[in-house]
Image 1 (cartoon, rainbow, N blue to C red):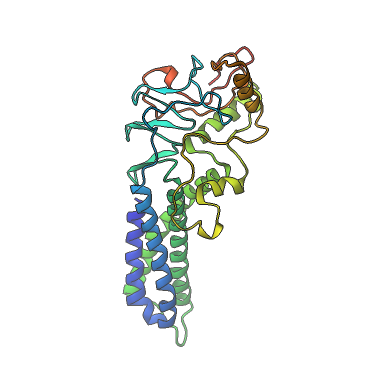
Image 2: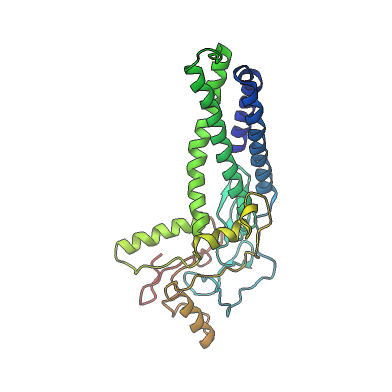
Length: 320
């Protein structure tokens, strides 16, 4: 939808630029239009990358490393590693089963109908760049038409006011640009926040649930384990070289395991205890405080396959 709307406003803007704005100032038009065309080209390019890149799925035969320092997530009831009965595969941390794609997606953020694809580990960077260039292109477009409208309202001497046709084009430009700038802009701000905090949309919902339980005094405060600092989080998605952040590039890592932050409650102690004792049940350790839930997107068929951060009280009772 955002792509179609951007295409529409690009066509309107280009028509306005070539037919109407040239009458206002030929030199200004020559400087503004190519830049806008490049921005829109980047919108299309990153959109295509987002659509055509597989977000990632669990390899056949993959099993969790029970002694890994990066850990794994367990089922709600049994404490065993998460398992998807639909795909008949174990589920890595942060992965979820998507009903639309009919598969488990690595580091699933959400299924996006506008790109007809899941946004997951391997195409999340392309999705972020797509949103960024939509925002920049719309902002640039808004400034272009606002400059023309301002000069039209203050027309005198060389500057000529808009004709009826140009006035119609200006109105159409505002009608095409403003909704995208507001709606996609707000959506982008949320995802830029998720990017900097290394959380997915699904994990954001879970953090809200955790915060509610903490406010009610039902559980103690729990630190999200995947937040490694804004700079490191951004580099993990967009790459180490800042000057290439706007350029499409492959995602690093396998999407099967993720590092956790130092000092995330007793998260590390939980994994050390399991490695030392050889006990991988997890249900006896009240320190396994966080993973991620996919109750809204999974098709495991059982409660135990629904997965996710599960919060346990001192007695080991599930709170979420």
